[in-house]
Length: 131
Image (cartoon, rainbow, N blue to C red; front, side, top):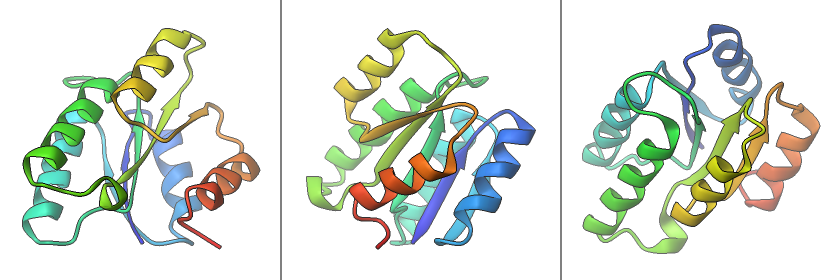
């Protein structure tokens, strides 16, 4: 499984990379712009990401805008819904409108910080990314 982690907080970034690396190859970015660059490169190399973890609040391009750009690119490239990347929004925010907006755009799940690894594993199983 190919995993992209977009997280501006160093501690959260290291934690997610260490935890998720047991399930696949992780690429790590520090903002939404880098995440979009990594996503485009993966598409160009014909090795798309299976899972993308996007922090909602990031510098340059936030997670919600990055998610919208990713979903728009998938449409432009003709990626079938069942083949598109699974996206988990990661947030410390209690503001439900950001989370709801992310679901409207096309995220599959969200994880509140600090991330509960047991809940994250449940989500990965539900998304059929792991057994």
